[in-house]
Image (tube, rainbow, N blue to C red; front, side):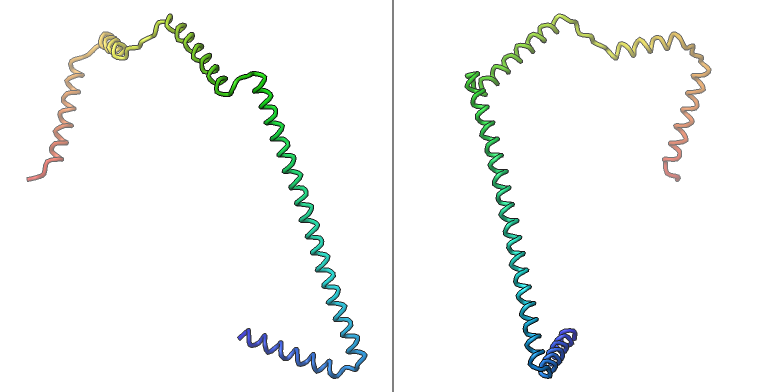
Amino acid sequence: MSKKGFLLGVVLGGAAIATAVMKMDDEKKAELKAKAQQGIADFKDRAIDYAFYANDAAEDFKAEAGQQFEDTKQKVADFADQYQAAKQETGESFGSSLDQATDSLRSELAKVEDDEGDDEDIVIDGGAAYQKAGEEAETSAPTSESATAKDTTAAKSDDESTTDESSPAK
């Protein structure tokens, strides 16, 4: 429905404009035509200006990106030159310096192991500690036969009640 309404509006608007133009005199028609052409020319000029602005911005961006690329390229080349100079000064390769570092570390670890061999290790036996604690508890706490008997009868009554509850009723 909205498409039909839009088309109807365009047709009626076009007819109204055509009727208005037909009723105008020649001077007004020429003036209206000149204004329309001037508007179109202004629009084209603005479009061209914006195209030039966009082109200038793109060129500036390309120039800045190219400069950044060249700067980075120069930094990498300088670093490579420094690395080569350092390598030539020492006359060694990376692998040989790594081997030397590994050998020195091994010798230092061997010295530490030799130094630790002189010390005695401390061994803690948990079983002996608990056994001593148990012996001390037996000697320090007096046991009464009546307390032991009460604990035993209470334990038996608890066991009997649990067995009665767990067995099915006949």
